[in-house]
Length: 65
Length: 132
Image (cartoon, helix red, strand yellow):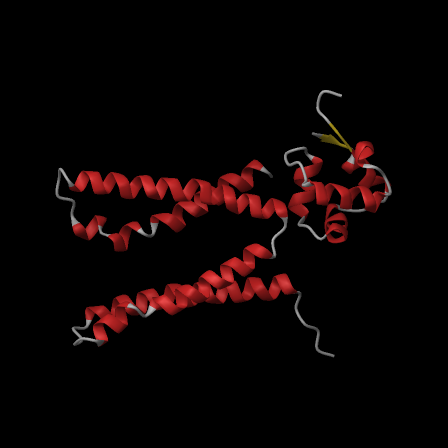
């Protein structure tokens, strides 16, 4: 699954650690999601979407799109 | 004003302390068993690590519970490496014992159990690399 997390984070001038703290996860988790090595669970994906004030579809989309 | 440590930090410290206590208790038991003590003291010495093992297990579970979803997956993948490989090792040793005499000094349970944590750390390193 692809995502725009890195772009959204950069727009807020947040480091990976800043975002990790806001989402209550480890920095490694943010790194893995941004590099598309790990797909977050639905609760975490919703938390990310809520934090950036966007819908899930605006942040996450399938590989073939 | 005294500032308390974050929960994850306190759990990690208690987990580390319980691990050290467990390992130390094992080697103390080994030392005590080298002394020819009468029963039931020799049995008590052999069982010395058991309460420390329970303490370690409870701290390990607490440690896992406070991890995030990716870290939990990493530990699960580490277990998925360590558990079947240790099982395979024990199974193979059991079968080999039916045909050849294995030297007890090298292949007894007190040597083989160490393979489980060792393979767990191998699995942990592999899983961490996968998500790095």
